[in-house]
Each structure stands twice: as C-alpha cells, then as structure tokens.
Image (cartoon, rainbow, N blue to C red; front, side, top):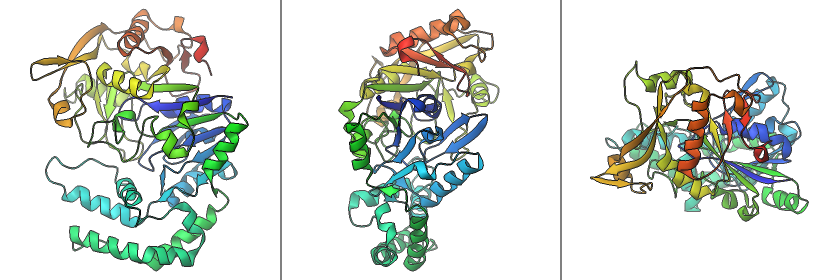
Length: 436
C-alpha cells in the first residue's frame, strides 16, 4: 500500500476532492492535516453531490478510515452537520472517523473576532477570509494560553475552568474592536461543547500514534491538503494566505506522519487559474460581463463551496505552478476542468512576468512586487468540440493534447491526469503508471 499526497498547486479550489475520491480505494487511511471549515471540497459520489469542509473527502470510500489530524482547527457543529449530510446521502461515516485529540477547537468568539478584524481593517487591508474563525483559532494555538483542544471536551467542569479566563479575555478584545460586539458566556459554551464532545467521543483519539502504528503495518495512507499551495502561510502570496501550511510541508506537523515516507505527490491544477479573496493575481481576466473571464466562471461554476462568493478567474499561470510544483516536489500534475476551456478559439498561458521593466520567471515572495507583475503570455490554439465524453488520450483533440504537453514543458513535471468533468469516469490517465 502507498503513502500518497494530493495537494493543490494554485490558490485552492483546484478540484482536489475528485482525485482524492478516485485514489481513496487504494488507501486505508485518508488524512486531513491542515485548515478547517474554510476549505470546500465538492465530490460527486454514486450520482450524489457532497460538499465537505472538514471531513476528508476520501471518507466517502466505504473501506477508508477518515482522519482529521492535529493540524486542523475544528468547529464541532460543522463536523456533525457533515456527518448528517453523509448519512442522508447513504454514507455512514461516524464509525470510520478519527479526530486528533490535539486538534484545536473553534468557538463562536473566534467568528466574532474575525468579523470585527476584517470590518475594522483599513482600505485594502482586509484579507478576504471566509469568516469561519480559522485565523483567530490558529492565533490562539500559537499563543499557547488561550486555546482549547478536542481532547479537552470530555470533562465539562475542567472545560469551564479553562474557558472562564479565555472568554473574559475574548469579550474584552472584541469590545475593544467594537463596543457593540457580541459577548459570550463561558458556562453556556462549556455545556454546549461538552455535548459536542460526547457526540464525537468515539472518534476523538491520538491520531499520531494511530498513523504511526498503521505505517508500521504498511497500511496505505492518502494525505489530503486543504486550500492550495499559494495560500500556504509560509510559502504562499503572504499576507493574502491562509493560517496553516496548505502545501505538502504541512503533513509532518499537521499529522505527525514523517513526510519523507511519501511515495507519490499529486499536484492538482486547474486548466486555468482562480482565486477567492484579496491579493494579486497576475493573469486575472477583467474583461467584463461578456468576456472570457465570465464565460469560464459560469461554465466552471466558479463560486466558493463554503461562501458562495464568485471566484476571480484568469488564464493559467506557469510562473506560480513552477514555484508550487517545486515546493511540493510534485511527481505528477493533474489538470482539472479541462472541459471548461472547450469552445475558446485560443488559450493563453503566462510563461513569465514583467515587473518594473524586468522579465522574471520566478514567483516573487513580496506581495507588493507581485501586485506590480504583468503577465507575459504565450498563445496556443483552442478547440471547439465538447470533450466531456473523452475517456482516453486518443479521444482528446490535438489542441487539447498540445495544451497539456505545453503545461508539462513549462512546469517541468509530467502531466499524468486530465479531468473533463466531475464524475469519476471523466478522468483520463495519460500515463499508465499514474493510474488509480
């Protein structure tokens, strides 16, 4: 059995969930190691559509055990909602779910703190968060003083003692941002979260030891990253990033599994680029309601799974992909939503940037520099036919194959998968060694 990782190489929303779903039957454990309910994964399984935020999408596989690692921040009501959604869709997952007792817990005061921080930010300073309390929870984790972990939910009295000073501090902090800020009661929260802990009691465990023992037995593991590598706290387009390591770098710290044991890393990339929230996006298409950008947005259904916000859309950016493919040491690229580009006469790929009169081919780590970057495009011919029914490489038009080949050349990594629709069957394995 293999140790595999699926990671997004752009700003998230790359359709990672589909590849996880395809690969899951080959693995015993499916592991989320970063992020929280700010992630959004949509999977079509047996004709039904499931939208998950915290649970690993691979838990839809009936033989897999889903693991939520210590690097994830958890809002317990959301996990319970997702479990109920799965049950309503005929997927019973509670007995196959393991949650790290060291994972940190999101409370309602985190939501309020994030809302106030975003609304009080100066012009152009808002990050564009999902408002799910993710950042404030990670802040508390780093502070080492004001955090609660999933393992703390099993004792109501101890939880209340823990929450008392935390809630007092949070109320003061939020009132400092807005005198009308919502206030919270530690006793009410302790009772509520203790009840959540009771409902999830059978799931909460030491997942680091669980994975370590499974690795000794050679049981396969599939690590599922949330968001995308350009949102990685340390390696993305800072400060317009998420609060965790959303690249493969987060596996070791976020799960306790030694990342050097990984056998294969799949880098997931859309056939174009999308982004939600603030920050520069050099290839963004701002060509109006009748333009190509809006066409791609509508056909690709580019609206956030979590927030419903329209995503910003642009041409494929090979500069960013070279950066993230190298960062993750991706073995294979999976090009998703290729079918969305059908019908366009020509396609563009950014092969470099021009900034302050200089041509650069490396992704700048300075957000101010990135904001001044102008894309240097290469134009390729498009294709007119619908490719959603393609199942083999030979079914694709030569222009689509040329587009994939050029991506491979520019990024320097093999393209092993082309996806032409949301269904499992709409997955074309371009190289036999990359097959499921």
